[in-house]
Length: 244
Image (tube, rainbow, N blue to C red; front, side, top):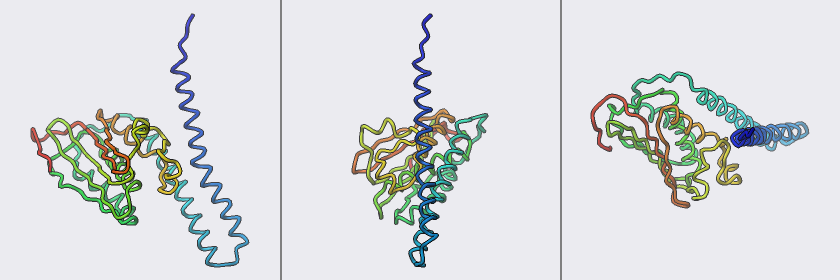
């Protein structure tokens, strides 16, 4: 009897990597919070104490973001029956932009939204689609140079809706492009510590697109920036909607 255990071993390796990465993502900020709290106990200088408290708050937000992203990813992976209904793309884009704009303004990054015709619609669940676009925008803002621009465009040919998020930042090395949608994968871990994030955003995007029977593509040139494109089934409407 021959039993091929290749897939079982692959899944077990994926599970081990996931647990190891998750442990690291949670242990690092939790450990930092503990050390900062111990230092605060004996810190007489109010200015130093304030800086330490600010770091505690930042590390707490980091833990919270990791947990929120894990819950979001788990909910999306669970799938279930999606609401197959027309969703106005311009509203999806606007909600996603509103969610990310404070972080963009903090880094002096302008989010430029091309005019999206109100009649352009995608078929699916609004909440998941907003999550996907917001994660692409969040990723673009994090890896853009300060005082630069992120462009968002959407169009439809009557069959497929195309949503593009383009940044003019660091770009992605060719060797990493195939892996960026994996959970917790970081192109440059040292750089990621400075930009924040959980390493789950693009994984969430991949699962949303899969749930909607679409595709996600990326074009990137190191040092020049990246363009992520969502291709989704179009909702009922005109046969063709020209690019804005």
